[in-house]
Length: 101
Image 1 (cartoon, rainbow, N blue to C red):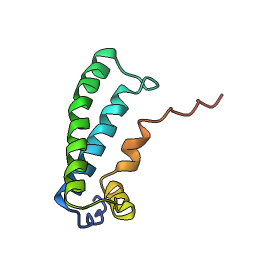
Image 2 (image 1 turned 30 degrees about the vertical axis):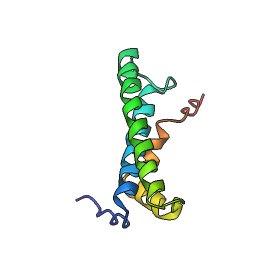
Image 3 (image 1 turned 180 degrees about the vertical axis):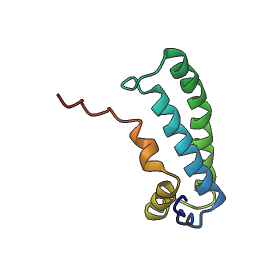
Image 4 (image 1 turned 90 degrees about the vertical axis):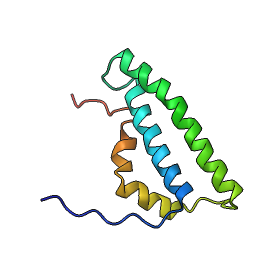
């Protein structure tokens, strides 16, 4: 039986779209990461999709700014990222450690 995840913190719709778009962009960057095993076609497709994710992120941040949400509530957004497995997903963007030997 899987452990129950903590609930997501309360987010505005724009904050939720920001988190979703950010994690989708992170996933795509992980697929593009040249330090990870993969093929060029997969990376190409991810790079093409990244353009759309960047537009969605821009739109979410624009909406937040227009609504007067001028600051990101980092602790709340970080909690949301953790609940949605953001740490593991973001780890795919980094350079993997050298193998022991």
